Image (tube, rainbow, N blue to C red; front, side, top):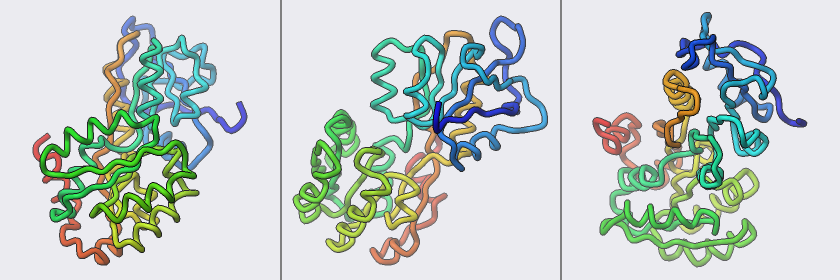
Length: 281
């Protein structure tokens, strides 16, 4: 398939054998050609391995697609552990009966909200923009906010509606929280979101590390190490036909120091912030 490439080396990690004990776990790794996929492959490489990469999905014990596009291309009848996929997409496939699980893209919404509280303790009004497909996250955020945070949520059908949504939202909130949503928050919309928020004097938290580099205040995102560690734990415990429920791998906090100074953010020690959010978890 155009734009896709297969991992051609060994997935070099010390992993469990297939439950039947008939040799190494055969993994079909796929995804768009990118630095991210290369880093993912390299991060899984050591001199020895009890897992082998196969170039044929039909010969694999488990499929390992990276990203929504690769996940959409895999066979619905094969066991799948999808990496960095949209929560809505993976949950819908599971509801439709696929033998699949995976690692959601980004961070748990409640964790991102906790990051807002840790960085901006005086911010009591948090604005959120959600696509209609991700509206189910509104309830989860409301439960996390409890009585501490007043949420204002704008629901949009497309990126074209962002300017109007921001014009309504920003004057009424202290900070803008963005959750992963490729349709709304991407390289094409980053300038609009970040500049509009900056002109209104409202910091942005989320949705990922790319936005932090572009001008978002901070975000929790899944580093390659986060994703690799989570994936290895799943593959090490894999038994044919048995996959754990989907989860987030994100435990890496990134902060833009220039933006932090602009908004007078005092706590920029990521280890201290992690402790305040996750404690002894």
